[in-house]
Length: 463
Image (tube, rainbow, N blue to C red; front, side, top):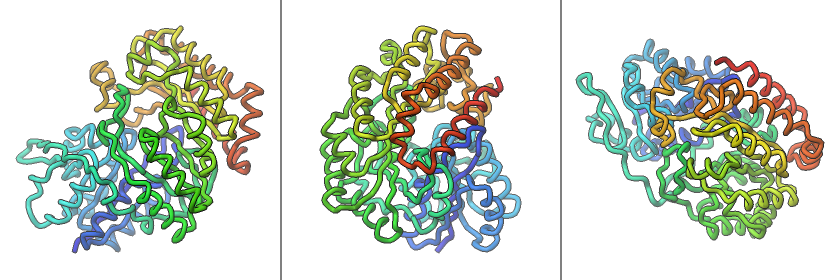
């Protein structure tokens, strides 16, 4: 029996991202426990966890540590690895998540990191846990160093039957801790849990990740409801955030999940901070969502330029999207829009068109983000890696933006971002809709404060 410590790396950036329940490491902890090992989970996005890491290393004395990081957390990940190796040089450190998957060679250039887990981690971590006392170099889905050379094994096949994966290790996190910070949905402090009901997306948007592959794989409605019922019964959870890439690709499956929630009278609230393809929605589906308890959705429009829609392979029906936003708002579902400014070849006219779409829409809130080319995306290959090498990983941040891939001068691009935020939120119609429909009225003042301070942090952007 070995001891595994799984750490969600943290880098509280200038925009103070919402802290979500770390499902990735929670799934991995569940996997190794099923194999008879001990496991713990630490989330370094909480300041107090710095001291807790030292205590855990001393008292738990792990044999294996798994570090999970996105790109803006890369510096934090390497710092944590260095700190651990100083006092525990024999511990095996595995890095995984979006950043190590996209930058395995760069991550393994750090001698404090022994292995990289590529893509979905459950299968590779299970194999590692079984073969701890043997050579792990033949395990698919990992990268490692051998005689100074970095070896990347083939990505292991994605599991088709997601029902076979154990539920996340909910008991290993401080659920109350997540109720005291803003979540991905940004609708208030409340006890909630995140869910993945599917993995993968068949669409080919050039700016999107490929962690879960391009084949849609889903859990059965029965399995999803079993997880929700367990959380309601054992932890008193009544709020859920669904993090799928595209929850509604299989409309029948999605409707069945809502049907079960309604039939079983679960009495829950559900938010979709991402994961809904808007032009696949229709009024009957949205009405069923509302009846099942959905009170928050995000609509990823990205651009209102048809030419850019084609370039980035989003290919949304913009007229339908505008109608879907109206339906959601009429049904009092709080609706947030996502817009991206600064795509390759984008002109000033294209940026204006996107902003005008947002302003005339019935969206409650909107985010205007700067296009960021993450490695592993087609966009990164499209522009060439030399465009990104001068930007530190901590600044691969689409909130404040350190890139300009468009035909517009940088100062003008960022000026349009500021103007869009100001005009959008100061419109009387918007203020009325927010006041009327915000799901958690107690959170309104805090939300307003975060929006205002976020805007000023954008204005102080360093370039």
